[in-house]
Every structure is written in C-alpha cells, then in structure tokens.
Image (cartoon, rainbow, N blue to C red):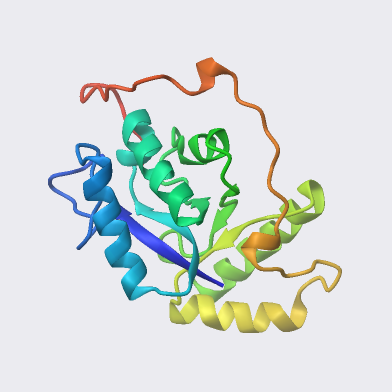
Length: 193
C-alpha cells in the first residue's frame, strides 16, 4: 500500500516551504489537480494521500475542500497527518464521503533514540487496545527502522497489523459549527505547530 505525501503550505510560509510541488491555500482547484496528477505520476501505485507539513492549508476550509474534491475524483483515501491541532483535513474528507483516518502517533516526531521509538510503539499498542485501532506513521529513519525490527519480535501478537485501507474508519459526526464555511487565518493569533 502506497500513499502520496503531498507537500502543503505551512503557517511559516513563505519562510518555510514544504518542498517542490507544494499546494498552497491560494491555488485554484485546477492548479492543485495539476500538482496532484504530477505527484501521482511519480507514485503510480498510490491508493491514498497524506499531507506533508501543511499546517496552513489543512486549517483553511476552502483550500481543504478543493483538495478533498480532487482526491474524491482520483479515488484516493485520506490520511490526515495532523500537523496542526486545528487541522480540518479529516473532517472535510469525511464530510465529502471519503475514507479518511487521522494519525494517532508519529514515530519520528523530533530526534529520538531507538528506545524512545520503542516506547512510542508501546503507546500505540495501548491506543489500539483502548480504541480498537491506532494509525502510526514514520519516515524510514535508521533508529525508527531498528526499533520497528526489535518491536516486531517483542510486540503484542494479539494486535493485528493491517494496511491503512483495512483500518476501521472512525464514524464521527461533525456539526456544521465544527467545520466553518470559510476560515480566514489571523496572523496575529497564537499558533502551535
């Protein structure tokens, strides 16, 4: 199973860029689609898409809706990386009727030792037992790979590892006030990233 990790505009833009092919809040749906098509050309077996960075885009209602419309037409599901606590990507995807998930844990969230990654994997096991599932993401950092190898031998074998598309979709309902019709970012408001 392969996901396209789409670079998206950050709160720190223009000083911090997510990389080549970055989708921004000001882009039209057509411009977003062109970048998505290009990314899919480089990742031809993708079944889903996630956001790389994207703290500004995933908190902007209009831009998130345009992005979800593109995903719906492409037949891709959504993984919200939750790079900002106010991300609405998951909610917009579900509102649009797309299969969608939110990550529960990022294994390489900051510099970590192999032991710290193992401790995070144990937290993921606890979440999976409590909720019935847990979505964990990571990039292939050598410490993460070493921890995963060790964890695969020591892990709770009652917890099944499955591709994301086989995870249960959280059936949450969102009231209209949970998803604002338009969001204007206030540069003076305190932002956590």
